[in-house]
Every structure is written in structure tokens, then in C-alpha cells.
Length: 385
Image (cartoon, rainbow, N blue to C red; front, top):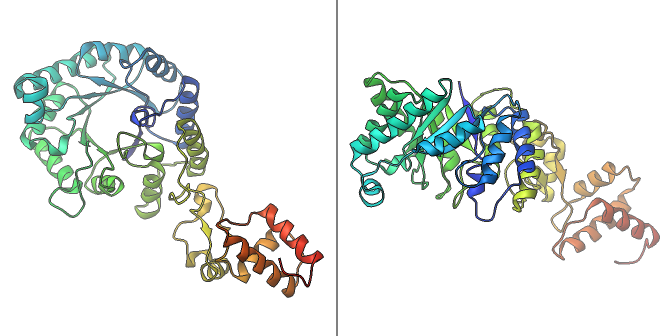
């Protein structure tokens, strides 16, 4: 079993300058639910009254997904989350020696007691509540501290232990890798008679969030945290679309995700986050299935597999050909065919010349401009542009 947790509405709003109005949050949650996301983390109700109201309204929306809230290890945070009606609660508390000594001013045993007490408190108030405990900055904390806190959390009622690579510290293939960490954590918890679900929350500070998440999955993690566009603190977290596509196409995981809805979701989040989708972004970027150079285009038009390892149909998208200074005759002929424009070899060659000249000005020729170029070439058969 593998669950996807999307945190666009919680971690995503920790992106500087990003805020979603409640009606937009509902629209995003609806789309996540339609795609088939298992857990939608909707926010931290204690942060603002507006977040509280948004979490509350989404929790009462009747979605299929588990609706989750974020909480410090404090009773007041738990109370606010449960007032909202969530059925998933993420409780966090860092147990690194440095944080305990310099921030919390606590001994480990005192911190563990607080974590356990809050988890028991939440479970007593709502016995069917799914509870995740996260030792924040897990992978840089002393492992013995993590095991102590995680074991106590599970004994108190936590269903999930999340491995948080809070600073994007892990690098695949090194001594600090998520694969080995997941295996070691599962093994040590099992020795104590515990078998909680394991989640991984991977930040992208070094560019390895997706690779680390897949490492975690390979080692047996059952939940992976994501966000749309990888939004989040600093360099963000795992991008949802890239993860889902990798799981489906490379690992043959098929959870019934409706991937064709991803472009619509990404457009929605991009618009209201005020963050454009990079044109070269995998899967959902404008150029993800666009071919440019003449050699590439000629081969791709013969058979897309020559220059595509991902079928755009998976996302409800189509292959496209760009027209600019790199174009060849096959590109122009393809574009003319798409527009159902009659042409002969001479006209196609003259259109190609104008397309290349336009491309040298630093832009591509769209369909509307291509029509104008064709008209010009027909009216001036012997003149240069």
C-alpha cells in the first residue's frame, strides 16, 4: 500500500508570498480529491482564524480523502484541529539534542513525555483519528533520540511516524541516504514491537527531494508527502506530478490516480499562488512535450518514442512542434497540416525561411502568425521578407 499526502495547502502556503483564499483552497482540495490523493493536509488551524475556517470548511466537504491538520505538541493546537473536524492530525516535535538544549530547554525524557501525553490526549478525544508524529529534522537528529520519541509516540497511539528531511540534507548513494534510514527505523521500531506506517517528508534544498522520496518508497515507506509545483519552505518539497508519474511509469504503482487532471490542478495552483509554471517543468510545463530542433522533430513525427520517454496522453496532453530558427521542413509541414493549409514544396520552403528569420528575433511562431506568413508568401511569391 502506498498513500500520497499532499501539503500544498499547508507546506505550500509556507512559500514566501503564497496565500490561498478559502474558496480557492476548497477548489484545490476538490481537485486533489478527484485525482485520488489519500491525505490532504489543509493547514495549521492555530496560525490564523482564516486557516482555521478553511480547514473546518474543507473537513466538512465530504471528500473521499482524509482531511488533515498540522499541530504542535500542545493541547490547544489539538483542540482547534479537532474542532475543525479533521480525521488526520500531524503532530510534530524536534528531539535533536541541539534543539532540546538551546530552544526547548528540555531533557529528552521530558520532551518524550509531552509528545506521548498530547498523542494520548488527541486519541482519547477522537479514537478513530489518524495520528502522525514527526520528529522534525529527523535525519539530522540523534538516531537514539528519534527511536525513543517514535517508540513512545506509537505506544501512545500514533499510527504514522514521519521521517522529516527538513533541510534537504539527504543525498542518494551517500552515507546519509533515505533508503537506509527507512530500513533502519523500521527495523529498530520492530525490535520494540512497533509497526507504524512510515512517511517521508523530503525537502529539495539540494535538489534531491524526488530521489530521496523514491528511495524511501523502495525501502518500504507507505506515505510520501508532496505539493503542487513542489511549493514549500525555501526550495520546497517533492513535486506531486513528478512523483506520481515516476511511481506509475517506472515502478508500476497504479492507485487509480487521474493524472489527466494534473495540468488543470497545476494551472489553478499556479494562478492563485502567483508562481508561473516553468516552461521546462517536467510533465506539466509548456515545453514538456514540445520538440524544436529539426532533427528531433523529424524523428519524433515519425515516431514520438524516438525523443519521448513519457506519453503525453497520460496527462491528457499532446505532442507539439515549436517553429523558430531551429526548425526544419518537417516541422513546417506538420504545422501546415495541423492547420489544414494546402501547400506545395516551394511554398513550404519559403514559409520555412520566414519562420527561421522570425526565430532569430528570439521568439517562436504560433498558429496565428503562421497563417499570416503563409498569406504573405502567397501574395509575394518572388519577394523576400
